Amino acid sequence: MTYKFRIGLRPQWLLEGNAEQPEQPLHDMLSLLSAIDATGNIAGACRACGLSYRHAWGVLRRFETLFGTQLLITRRRQGTVLSPFAQRLLWANRRIEARLMPTLESMASELQEELEKLLPETIPHLRLHASHGFAVEALMQHMSSHPPGLELRYRTAIEALASLERHECDLAGFQVPTGAFEAPIMARYAQWLSPDDYLLIHLAVRNTGLFVVPGNPKGIRGMADLARPDVRFVNRQIGSSTRYLVGLMLEQAGVSIGDVQGYETNEFTHMAIAAHIASGMADTGVGVETAAWRFGLDFIPLVRERYFFAIRRTSLDAPAMQELLDIMRGHEYLSYVRQLVGYDATDTGRLQTLQEAFG
Image (tube, rainbow, N blue to C red):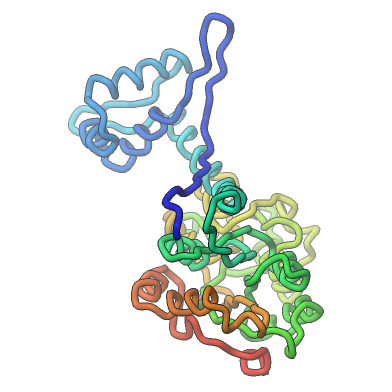
C-alpha cells in the first residue's frame, strides 16, 4: 500500500517581539508583497492570495507600523509598486528560499522515510543521492504518486558516488561537462565508478554558463572577465562539481583564483546563485540556464553537461528500479524536462555502460 501523507518543510520569517509585543510571522505579508510585485495592484494580489481587500490592507499597515517605514508606493495612473524596503525584503526571501529549499526537501524526504518505516506494509523506497538539479527535482515530483516512491538526499557528486559505493543509496547523481573538461572531471570520479560494478542512467543534457544582470551592463563575456576588479563573482560551495569546473575554466582562461573578487563567496544551488546576482549582491556566477531564466537574468553559455545516475548492475532488475525507468521514459516526465530552459531530454532514461558513455 501507499501512504497518502507527504512531509513538507518550509522556511518561515518571524519578527521577534518583546514582553509586550509577541513575535509576528511574516508569511502573509511576504505573500502579499510577492503578489503585488507580480500583478502591479493590490486587488489582483488579494485575488491571488485569497484575501479580502480590507484584510490585506490591515496586514500591510500593521507591518508598516512595526517596521516604521512604507511597504507600498501608490502613484496616480501608475498603480502600486513596492517601496525599496519592501523590494529588499522580497529579494531576501527569494534568496533564503533558493538557498534553503533543497536542504529542507532533502530533510523532509529523509523524515518521510523514517516515519514510513514505522508503519505496516511499508514498501522500501529507492534512495537517490544527487546534487540539486531541475530534472532531479521534477523526477521527485513525478515519483511521489508512484509506489514505492523515491527518497532524495542532496549531496555533492563525489558524496553521492561515495554513498553508492558504501551501499547507502541506490542511485548517485553526477554531472560531466562535454569537451575539454570531461577528462579531468571523470578523473575525480574514477575511484567510485568501476565499469564492472555500475551502469549509468542518462538523465539530461543541460547548458551551464555565466549569469549576468539583464543587459549585461559590465560587458562580461567569459571567464577572463572575472579577473577584472569591477566584477563581483559568487561561487558554488566547496566540494561541488560546479566549483571544480569553475577552477578548470579559470585555469584555461589564465586567471588566478586570487584575482577573482568573491571567489570564496558560496551558494549551494543554481537558484541561490541566480538570486544572489538578481538581488544585486554579485555581478556574475556559474550555473545552469534554467535558473538564470527563472530569475530574469541574461545567460552566457560556456559548456554542456551530461547528468547521469549511477546504479549497481545488480539493482537493475529490481521492480522499483524498473518503475523508475518507466517514469523517466514516460511522456509526462519527458515533456516536463523538454520544457526546462537549457535542457535536452533526447536520451533521458537511456541505460549505458561507462564505456558506452565515455569511450
